[in-house]
Length: 318
Ligand code: SF4
Image (cartoon, rainbow, N blue to C red; front, side, top):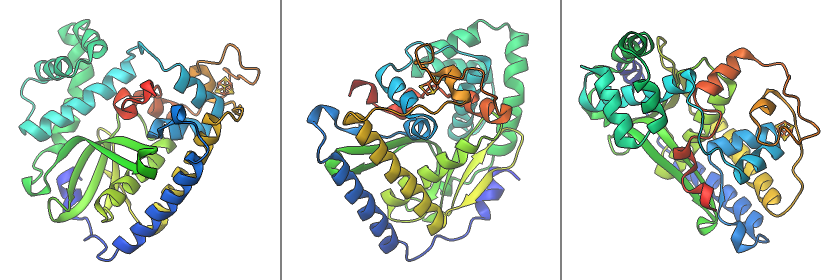
């Protein structure tokens, strides 16, 4: 099933969700205000992009280390390049309606966005290598993302932000593709484009986006989905239970991050993520040989275990 067919099967949005969403926002607002009340101004705003919430769920010291020493020049691995390329190919297909010269179109998009590491990676390939990497992605994008009716008003790389406590707490993200919703008078849908294999973290990610979009629009999107090349969109219905779980996770993350920024010592929780931790050399709990769930790891790496700068906003300056 391509994305166009999946969209046509979406249910109508819940008509009376505004009151429920107002209650969810009020609870988060109360949590945020309570958490920031004792924090000094230099610790604000508290920023909780999806990558930080994921880190906090893994290891508090990892989250703190990556906040204090964010990666500067991220190594452009093959997996990461595929992820960057796939996002741009989907955008081009949606905006221009076709991919005529994918290598040139990708090169232009990377240059325009200042994605120099990815552009260098592409330029280092000869034609055969570039085709071997890109052609399967191009075929998958063309199959899945063609013929989407303009009435869905597709938006790509759309920022979504939840601001609480007068801006003292900010949860932000960049939606790969957003379709429908109030601007289109269609059921709302968010699709995250994933180049790796399915990862458990991806589900938490799309639920968080469902929450942010629902609170932004005061309308619950019909579904949030992950799309992996060669597969159907994996849609997840957005129920009140889903939103409550996402809100609870976000509220816990706000409390956790606020207490760390207030000076509580970070706890260590080793796992496969130790091998990517800036503190691994000094940490007594480090387990860089921890067994890896290969599927989870590949999914995470392909979509950027190291934080996506676009996802962090200006977090690195605070
Ligand atoms: S090495 Fe592992 S346990 Fe130690 S801080 Fe890093 S992620 Fe946490």
